[in-house]
Image 1 (cartoon, one colour):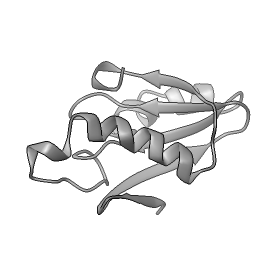
Image 2 (image 1 turned 90 degrees about the vertical axis):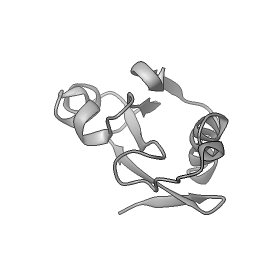
Image 3 (image 1 turned 180 degrees about the vertical axis):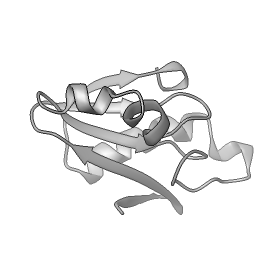
Length: 100
């Protein structure tokens, strides 16, 4: 399972498809599985995009810190650091609810 570390917090991600990078950020109380797989978004987008899917901290397979200061701006930093981890300089973003 692919993870990267952001200051001690393990963040889970998946990559699907080929094409321009499209970072997909799920909604509150969801995860990659519920927000993107069950709803067929991945199936419908992966033929024309390289999907970068992230389980936001506190969700899915990512770590769930108990300190409130580990959320908020840190969640945005997770996306930026994931892109750096994958050597992605430019990407389109697709967010739902909390992820937008």
